[in-house]
Length: 324
Image 1 (cartoon, rainbow, N blue to C red):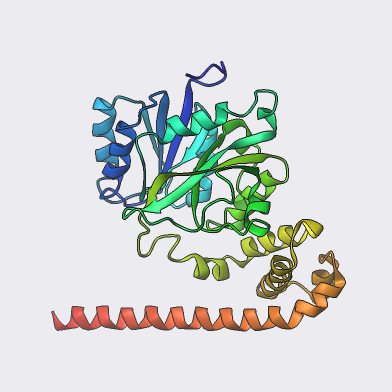
Image 2: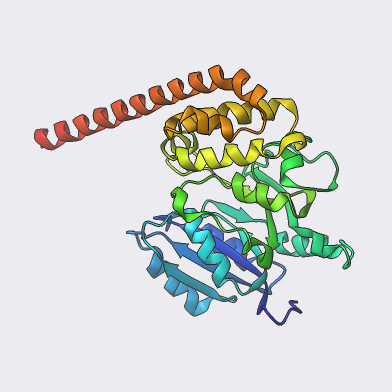
């Protein structure tokens, strides 16, 4: 149970959603089956036009756990996460997407592993993170190098070479310290926030499959490459902060970071002198410049192809209307 007087629950489970009424029942059912019961569910809706709100209002009448719902049209997932962190009444904050669902012991296992961290060491940690799998049981990405690993998101990705989606919980008070920057659009990659947290806090990573995922066509995951190009200001921030890590980065990600820094600087029409001034290593900046130019040219092709595809779809729609 939660013993912190600042919070009413041990966990806040947060779900951002948009027109996912067909998927939310699976999320709800997985929460109903949780063996650990001291939690609330907060749902941030991005302006759904389906029966999402009606569905949630019905659950609120009968659910065995508290459900809170709010709607904020058009602000995007990152703004929803910021608002969810402010609203959270749980000591720990869990992000559970609308196409994800938990195994029955997920919250119980998160708390168990948190409690294995000595109390004197817990202020150094942000939370606990486990593995994700498809419904078939196939693991998403790679396992952690140890069954219990104390590390951070930066070293996990670039030193231990662990990849693929993971799922966990974090201290709400820490997450509130690192909000997503609002001025950089709706699709700022979460790497910025996780990297910022990683420079100050450790995470306990555990080799337990506690979350299932079913990626939806047309969702944010499906459009990630295109969103990075469209939201190059956000991508520039990510790459600038990445190369700022300096010696913490191995050579491969360092080179990719510099190439992306140049790539998105060009998208943002940052003057050459300003680009160079913002690069910690001038040698790597000049070595990676041709790569950055090439990547930017490739991005322009992606945008052209996307516009061509949209025009083709629009022509088909017009043809269908005319034929009818």
